[in-house]
Image (cartoon, rainbow, N blue to C red; front, side):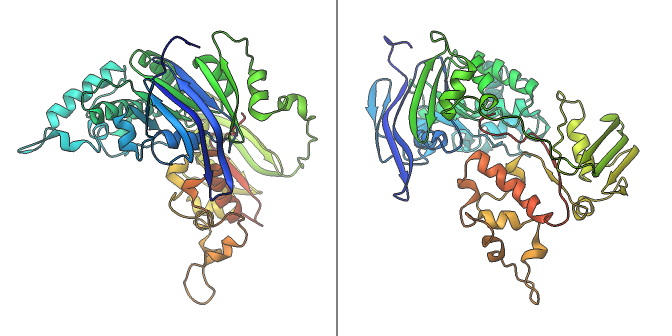
Length: 440
């Protein structure tokens, strides 16, 4: 730790309680120094997201102190005020607007600073957009639409937008940007993660980062220091350049026990011999060729491969989103044909979870409503076409809770639950992309 330096950001003894019952944070203190990446790790419910939302003004703490450059200041009351003080956040789910061009997305919310007598000064916006993209080595054209960019590039544009927002809101003040990255690599492949981190490491010259993650290997490889939260308390702090810390040490600090390899014996195989899905020589030209495998009832089968290998396209084909050019697909003994729509596959018991909750869930809706969205027949009234969400609420322990208020892992559980509920009693096969557990 750089004990002789003054942190650019420091919080001391921060506590937060929700509904006078749930103690989300209990006397937590962290510090961030100029030009470093600080990791904040912990299981779901450890308090990571709550702490980050306090730093950007989404939540107000019950008590605690915030220091910027060694000077005590009030906690921000909203994200705009946080940006004025140099703090911004890039959330886990993609926050891009697909049909905006890159330069439009970068300056979204700051258009008033580029308004001239004849409307927006588009050429000036494009010029400054090119400057910041060049500064952070983001390879794309400012005229590109956001949906045209690879996921890793989209994430880098989001980070560049966060830095730009700090600069525009601070209006020339000498502030040291602190960018919070909340699970930024969750939707990315291994290759995309490494590309993202190489860009972030270059950005350390001008920014500091708080990196929230549950992926231990990338924390060990890329962060300078790491704080571990458990049950709302700070339980460990490591300087990875000085402390001899292993992945096992970090795992033990996160979960409070030895790694799962030492805790549990190997599970007994309970897979039946009944084949519920058979793929024979499946081919989609330009995506994958001659793919064959079988899935038995009660089995969890993984498809692994680098970006562009065709694994995602195979899953989308099984779900009926994409067609196929050759081969055979058999579901529960019945052959499925290319061109069958997803709802036909759903009736056969095949659900598809892309892993992108931002596209598949309504965050302002309750959990019960989201679970019901692909299962409307069950919640429609028998005699009147009225949706009875109360039917699902009876079976959902936290059904009234807003989906957007849940942690990242809980959100994925809601995403899976809607398909699980739809396929209940039919026999269920899930085609899912990149589900992750916080301790993975």
